[in-house]
Image 1 (cartoon, rainbow, N blue to C red):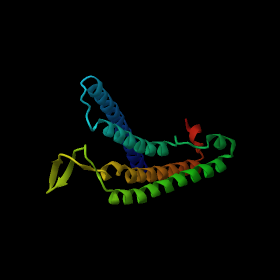
Image 2 (cartoon, rainbow, N blue to C red):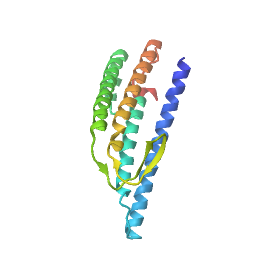
Image 3 (spheres, rainbow, N blue to C red):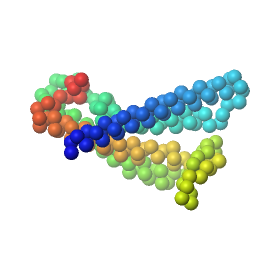
Length: 184
């Protein structure tokens, strides 16, 4: 059972890392394409800057879940090293619980934002599911597609926080717990 959970944890981490790499590559590609088209060919794409920004936003939100799971987020590492092990454990778990609550807020308000978001990006095309198949829509991508990352990231942050708490609790019970930066 634990081996399966560790396998899933590693698979999710690799998948999120791959998505971050894809979004970083997309940001660079969209930026280079826009600059070349703007200054060399004098014909900039109207969608270049928007896709660069959207790629950046999705990259940051996926990276948030990775940092929560790896405990690389801004933390009180100096305090952890000065406290006794059990006190450091309590403080670290408190902050992880606070981050879990942030994930819940992102889910709740993110879903509300997605469902109530109006407007469309006039410069963007998109694909939609209609009549049992994927259909190309030539213009006007709904803005809710861009902010759908908020509840998705909130869910991933919650899962990462719970996984981190469980992992630390098992380590404390086994006597192998160390504050986040002491693990390396």
